[in-house]
Image (cartoon, rainbow, N blue to C red; front, side, top):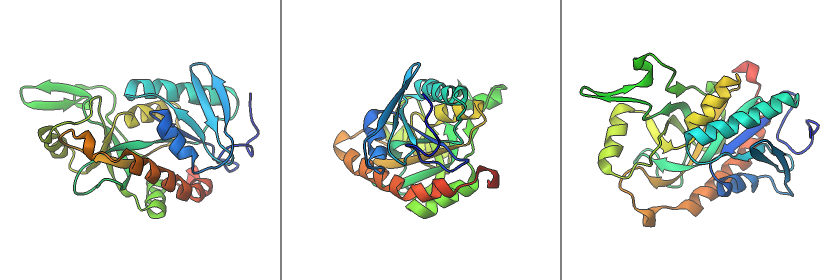
Length: 249
């Protein structure tokens, strides 16, 4: 099933957008910015939600590996349909590094970095790049990052992807020491970025902060507030994404 470009998605003649979240509640928070009945389109291994005049939405799964696999499946299906995506957005809630990204704030990644992809050695942690393999950082389009920050009030900085949510002050301090520009952490952004890079598609990551990075205290989490901030952000993003020209960035 291929829908014409003007039906049911946030797009211009050149920009078709896929938003990948980890879980359905994040996907639904994004969808609330685009009121109306959502179409559902099934492809092998994935189900896409298409709100009226909004981006394609994918609950890609928790963790970098599943997020990468699901995003790659969506990108491949779109390419085979003859309607490839021009931008992939990794979106959701996440932890923020105090005091720079307080609970309720927004962070847009100017660097999407795998925090724990590498090797522990007697001399400390070595990222996989220093072992001679792959990459640990993807760079979203700088002009788009600036436009998103201006439209939403998000702060731009590094967003880390880890396989384990930080739960101690010691781990939080270690991550900040390794990545001084880190503002937030999540579990999917790098995987989404890897899939996008494999297809030659630009990537963006936007996180609404639900909790501070540090000692695990579920009572202090503000998931509802963060989801509301995510909805508000995507309401402001629509004109930014529809006016963005990939060739200008």
